[in-house]
Length: 290
Length: 159
Image (cartoon, rainbow over all chains, first blue to last red; front, side, top):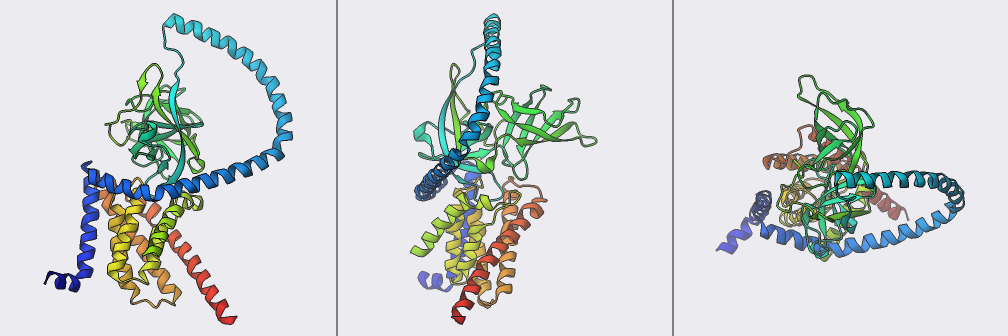
């Protein structure tokens, strides 16, 4: 009897069940009550991860081989330029060595901690977000390599974002350009703080900047260290435009992130700060510094 | 089934590794919807619903979206597309492209609505800046695939 009813109304039944299950998944995940949801999600990621890692390895090798060939052709001109640069830099090194000694003397005088060094885990980007709504990447290191939720992620050029989901061999990183990401920011010259949130495309916006601050195009934006997720002083980007709305209590500035997220291939996860201890706030809100 | 699963893996690989290279101002074609669109012409509504559900789950697993968002949207899209495909002549290009564009807008709008429901919603302007461009871009890629397919068929007839 039941089977007959199911066969008769199978279209409606299947549609209703899939919609109901999907809605249940969404509700459980948004309310963070979903070990079952995490299990299903991890299972799906696990089935596709070997192919993604293989693709990343193949394209990485091809890219390196092509890069080596191109580099060989450029090397002669580059060599001459570098020799000139080395001569100039030797002078600079002598000057900086003096400054370093002076810095060490002053640090001792002020009793400040030594220059920070981070414990880092190098990871390769193996996948990018499948939608146009969010900005996340998947990296090939997970809890097995010491990656935890909320850890900051950087690249050579500056801040990338933070870890939002961890699986044994992969992790999902929310980029600072994601619409729901927020990072405590500091304008280097003005010394005023704000909040960097994602904007459309590959840009971001610094919000809640004081109206009195003289924000200029080209100003450097760093992490403020407030919120405890991101260490202070990591480069975020530079100001490209400022916005003052009449009647608003704060001003905003559009920024160009220093990292080119379209070309991101390798990242570094900061797992700890030497002399300070492990990083991150594993049970913190998913949005970041707020 | 095996072909569907292989296609699913291929689409996941393409969407996560190649699609961003095709991005224009941050907008990339939705290859999951495109795959479902082509499947819907060959499958019954109940099968298309199931395939949409699975495609959506994979899309959610590799995005920052709440898990289940695209499963919901693509399940509904699979059902409607397969049902609508019965009334569209499979050989005519224009009605199929209109159907693809319409489903792109509907899928985006429903996703936007769900994100708002869960208070993760982008502003209403995203309907114009994300939903519409994504639907148009996906339709453009679909048109290129359908056009190439039709050209190949015509060449085969001549030869």
